[in-house]
Amino acid sequence: DRPGFKRYLKRVPLGIVMVIAPWNYPFMTAINTIMPALMAGNVVILKHAAQTLLVGERLAKAFEMAGLPKDVFQNIVLTHAGTEKLLGSGVINHVNFTGSVAGGRAIEKALAGTFASLGLELGGKDPAYVRADADIDYSIENLVDGAFFNAGQCCCSIERIYVHESKYDAFVDGFVDLTSQYKLGDPRDEATTLGPMAQARFAAWVREQTEEALRKGAKANIDTSKFDMNKEGTPYLAPQVLTDVNHQMSVMREESFGPVVGIMKVKDDEEALQFMNDSPYGLTASIWTEDTGAAAEIGDKIETGMVFMNRCDYVDPGLVWTGVKDTGKGAAMSEIGFHNLTRPKAYHFKVEH
Image 1 (cartoon, rainbow, N blue to C red):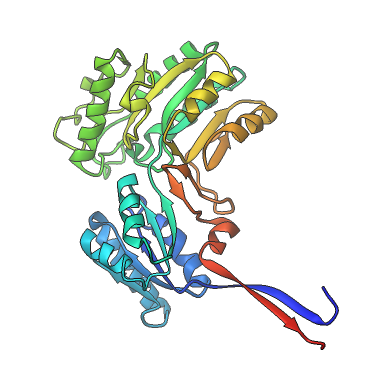
Image 2 (image 1 turned 180 degrees about the vertical axis):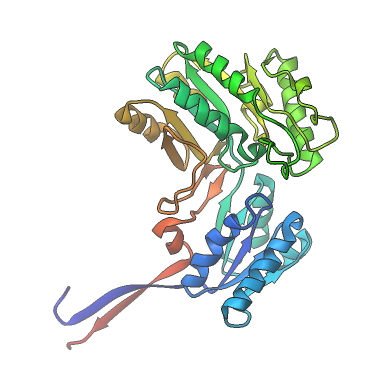
């Protein structure tokens, strides 16, 4: 406070917020921006992925039934070219996009010169580090799930694991054993624990990565012939655990977004940190340890937007969801995510003169 003055800040709406949503978790990823944007007083335009158009229609119907004023939320269907034209028109004030790195670059290019703000959550290659003091059984149970949940089609799924040399053999044996128990099949069958990938071409990419790794000396630890529905040319893909991998292999460098994971042996925290940061992506990383202080110290040096200890593949709406490097920029959820859907406005009144 200052005598004779009244000064304060407000968070005010940005205006028109465009949400370009992905096909995986099609309701949640869209809602994470739509709801705080509406709460902040913005108008929202949703352009959903071509594979999940009904999600946009159902959200529009839900808002209509809830009594949202007409046109405050609009669901539109556009081609890529149409989307780029709208983005370049200058009428959009903020864009939130979840998708590929190439898609993010195309959106940034389309917005050039409009000065619209932008939130991007793009690719990931999320690592896990199992320290010498980790609870091995607990780590195995959670990292297998973190790698293969939703057939690996999660933004923050575990795609590469680094294990301290003292626990490496026991970890690999347990990880392979649990993975072998998965049942690949029709997701409508209650006995199924691993469903298909979203498209056959996505499964083909993971097969290509795996085959390249095997040609370069990796070892496949899962006998995929035991999975009846695992067939070339289909979206049904058996889980695979690769050892004897290195960072010259695509499977340890480029996003897989499918049910394959590589496991490497490391001698200490420093080597693990070096490998975890040897990636163009940076969404989440998880550390498995009984030492909170060590996890915090390692976490400070990891080049990611989020750090977990003794858990992975988890969304906490009270914490910000953000990435670095080619994973993107901006933030969703938490108070920070809300602030990114508003702009600050300052009021400076001289009331005595």
